[in-house]
Image (cartoon, rainbow over all chains, first blue to last red):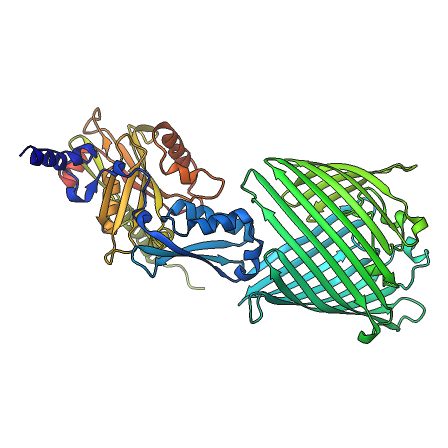
Length: 427
Length: 209
C-alpha cells in the first residue's frame, strides 16, 4: 500500500515539479521532467551512429587532405550516440577545410535497429570566382590573376586571365584553361589538362644581358595523371608541350620545349584552424626532362626540391621554407630559377641578382607571425657557375590577414639597401 | 490619351484600402491573445515555425534550438510592461512512424520537456510557456503585444552555441537578449504583432475569458 502511495504521489506530482500548469492543452502523460537525463535535448540522442560518409563533388580528392584531427573525430563518432551539436561542428570544420559552400548533414536509419547513418554532403559553388593573385611590387609593378572555376560530376573546369611580372623573368599575360577530374576509374587516379597561352614582355636588363633566347609568345599544353600513392603522398606524371615564338632574329621562328614532367608531393597536417596548435608539412620533388624523343629543340633536365613547414600555436605562427634546384642543359628562360621576387628572397630585385635567372638555386626563409603581424628573414643564392654563387639575405616585416598582405623588405649587406614594398592578395 | 475617369480612382483607392485592411486583419489573426487568470497567453495557430530550413534539420534527426520572446507594451508602445524570453530545443524522432516531436525548454529554473507530439501540438506547447503576468494592468489601458521567434544557427566549430543549449540562468538570458537585440539575419524568424493596440477589456469582449 505504501509503495502504491509513493507511485501515485510521483505521478501526480511530476507535472507540478515540471512546472506545467493545469490549463495546458497537452496531455500530462506526455510531459516529462527532462532533468532525469539532462544532457539529451535531442530525442534521437539515444541512437547509435553506425557509419559516417562524405559525399559531394569535391569529396574524393580532398578527404586525403583533411587534417588528421578531423579524420580522427569523424572516426570517433562511429559507434557513439548521435550528438547534433557534434555533427554540426564537424560539418562546420569540413566546410572550412574543404572550402565548400555548404555541408549538409543527412541522417538516415541504419541497417541495424536503433542505429543511424550520417552523410555529410559537400557542395561547392556552381561558379567559383577568385582572385588567384593580386600584387603590387614597388620595383616590378602590378601582377594579377583572376580565375573562374565550375564543378560538375567530379570534374572541375577553370579559366583564368593573368598578367604577371613577379614570379618569372618575363611579364607574361594571357589565358589559362584547366580541366581536372578527381577520379578516373578509381579514387586513386585523377587527371589534369592545362592549356596556357601567354604573350611576353622583357625587362631591358634581361634583354641586354645576353639571355639565351627571348620569345614573344608561348603556348603550353600539359596533360598529367595524378596518382595517390598512399595517404599524404601523391605523384603527378605527364608531358608538357611548349611552343614559343622567338623575338629574334626571325619573329616567325618557333621553338619547342617538350618535357616529361613529374612531381612527387607530400602533404601532412596535424590539427586544424580551430585547434590551439596546428602543424603542416608540404614537400615536393619535381623533375622535368626535355628530350629529343619528344621533339624538343633544347635538351635539359630540371630538378627542384621544395619544403615548407608551418607551426602555429594559438596566435603565434612560424613558417620555414626551403628550396633548391639544379638545371642541367639549356632550359628556356621561363624554366630558369629566379630569386628576388615577392615569394623568395624578398627585398632583392631579381634583375639585379641575375637578369637571366640561374641554373642553380638554393633558398631558405623563416617567417614569424603574431596575429596579423609578420617578420621574416630570407637567405638564398642563384647562379650558373659555382664561382658566381653569392648568398644574399634580406629581412622584412608586414601585415597579413585573410590572404591580404602588406610588407616591406630590405636587402642586407648591400651598398644601397633600398626597401621594396609589396601589397596585395594571395601572393 | 483618354482622360482618367474619377470612378477609376475611387475603385483603385477602395481596393487598396480593402487589401490593407485584409492584410491587417490577417496579421492580427496570426497572433491570438487570450487573457486568463491574470496571464496573457499567446498562440499562433497559422504560423508553422518548424517549417523550411528547420524542418530539413528535424527530418535529419538534428535538433533545432528556437529562441522565443513575448513582449507586452503598455501606455504607449515605447514602455515595455513585461517580457519573457526562453529557449526551446526541438527534435523529431526519425524512427517513429508517425511525426513525433520532442521539445525541451532549457535555461529556466525549472526545465520542462514534452515528447511524442505532433508538430502543431509541440509548437502550441512552446507558446503556452510564454504567457505574461498582467497583474497591475488596468482593464482599459492601451496595450501592444509581440511574439518573436528565431530559429538559431546550428553550432559551429569555435562558437559556443553548441554549449549554449545547456546553459542556464544569467548566461542564457544574456545570450537570448543578444539574440533578440540583432536582426534575424539568414536564420528563419517570425515576428508577429497584435495590431492595432488592445486593452484587456477588449480581449474579454472579443475572445471571452
